[in-house]
Image 1 (tube, rainbow, N blue to C red):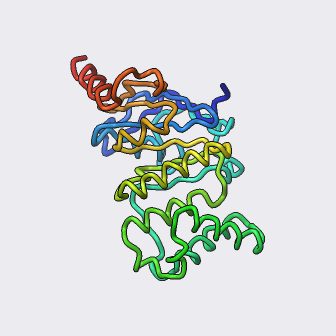
Image 2: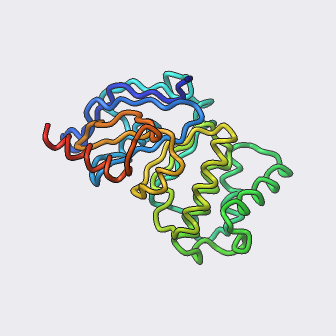
Length: 239
């Protein structure tokens, strides 16, 4: 299948310490791809290297079939970080319109798209409230809405379900499945293994700065994902 993202030999140092060693993985188009890690495995660093938010020491990155993250490729991706940094004196509606302006979309389409996104993340009733009045889980959802405002072909999500209760997690999962049906490829990470089992196509696991499981099909795992994860971590500790 056609690969929308390919990483080869990604290495990174931080404060003179090696934190990534020759990370290799590939993601096919229209997959929901999960990147799993124990704490302090530098998964966010890997994502930032992919998007060139930080510079690795060595790398081969092919994204959207380009060898470089050029302007055209940037228009077709988006990134939702784990921690949200929002303009607290904008309303939810104003915040979405502010982000939409970066994509030079006409006013009529802007209004329709904004209303659709607010509905998708269940924030229609809070659309005209200031963001500083939003709870953590409401901020998480408005941030998710802005991450898909450009209808990206490749979406990076860092802990998109943190702070969400089971109802809102279900909403996010349904939204991710809908995005996949609309031809969006999703690369994300979360610690909530039950959610992953229900929606993901493939997984990779990074531990102690190395990839220890590469692009494993979730459907091929014959037991609980939690058990599989613990076993793979344990095996890597023995090596």
